[in-house]
Image (cartoon, rainbow over all chains, first blue to last red):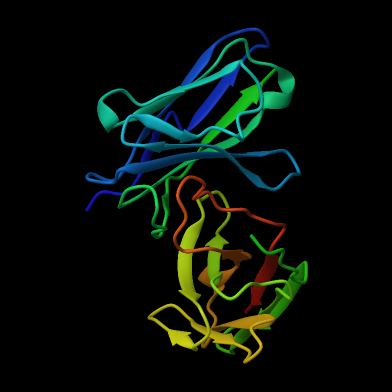
Length: 116
Length: 113
């Protein structure tokens, strides 16, 4: 089966611009997660979708970040306006099953975002 | 979820077993131990998990002490492709709501030719 895919693999934008990252989870996976690693820091959780619903968005840093998962398939993460501290690698992961059970998370290759 | 402590880095000779330790002294009875790794420029990859019995799969073995306060991930025959950062994560298996993973700093394993 195809793995988790993310687009683009790299994005370079200027401060103040908008960027939209896309994640396609493994087909049939209800759970979709966004994580990010900013320079020199640990991988941090951003939010969790169960199908199209936001289950947990406690890790979203501020209201410049907007995540959507229309139809419960792919997800987008929009950063508007981007700031320098948003630079890092954004990972998407998916897992099977509904909320209430933990299943192995499969990660995508990440999108490297550079804000200049 | 319980806190884990791992050494920041380790070296291992190619072909030898790599033993990566993890301390989780505050683990509770229902928390599992999970291991993930991140190879450079890739997303994290699930390796193995266990509760209290030792576990083995095609990638690795997981040895959990009887008191469950520590565990060891064993890569039986390390290859250069096993060079990565290894994360030990302790969490509940079944919990409504937060199912996110908490990644610490991990152990950077370098397999030496």
